[in-house]
Image (tube, rainbow, N blue to C red; front, top):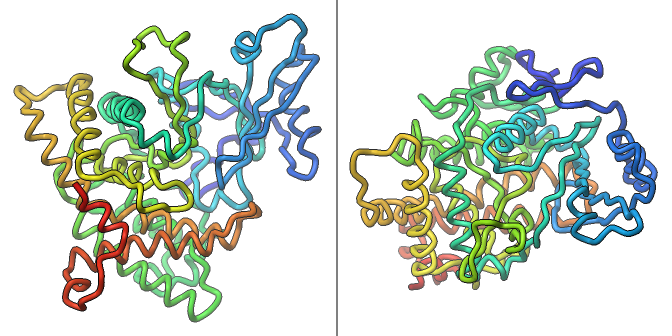
Length: 429
């Protein structure tokens, strides 16, 4: 049970309610030490008639375990097998500290309602199962292809224009966060007061939102050593500054917030085959997005800046980030699609003006993804059992933020230091 009475997705084995739908809950767990048997038990619970179950493991993510389950019934074509396939996603160790799983279920159902997510079949103790999306998972280099990034722009615009932002609470587990050891302004607060502070980080912005999520993560940082406490205090100070500088800026959506994906890396972008996409033609592609665990109301500029940062992949190759020309092309496609699908359209829209405004906003938000994922990686370094160097990744991503801060404050130029590669690439035409 989360603070404030919000469930973790089920209670006493009963199904969770998500947007009016009852999601089946299976009281079983996936085990990495007994992967095949535990996954098979879960799949056969929802598909008891399957007799030839096989699994394909996907390894593009660095948080969860993702398995594709298929029924290799003799006589079926690959397309027929894929149409019935199921994705089984098991959560990474300790990630409930970072991700509100109840909210994730609501997000999935909300997106499915608008045709933007596959059917959610069931939840289990440490994960969920949903229908497989036929298509090709992109790689970082694919994101840099005009035919792909304009397709991503159109789909992201649809998310932002069509899906409503549903208010709630910023789910967290107080006992698992390190908030009790936090020495900032919320020290010694009770649970209700703690929730108040968490949900009102950005004044006037309905919770949850990207600001309240970052606050939740800062509260969850390890504080066992003096060095860790100093790091937490430093990041808390920066978040306070960022909220003051950026959270109240005007932007697209109600209250300047849109329903954002917030994790639009290449592994979460699927290219839909033209054979099953009725809207496609020879010159365009259609994409869809998967994995909605980080989806939350956010400034549109953050979601775009965050996606642009992913052009470099997990290796953070700053030399391939989008240039000004590429960003403008993406944003031009996005703006046109956004205002074309907006339910309550303004009386008159000058798309050229809107493009320039959003280009400037994305430039302003370009340092925030490094801050966001840097904090996330510091937590993952202490809880994850996945073979990935989170500590190094944290320093790389936070380095992006500090480079942006030095550039925008003018301190880098005053010191006579050379402009770092990421900032050079961002400024390149």
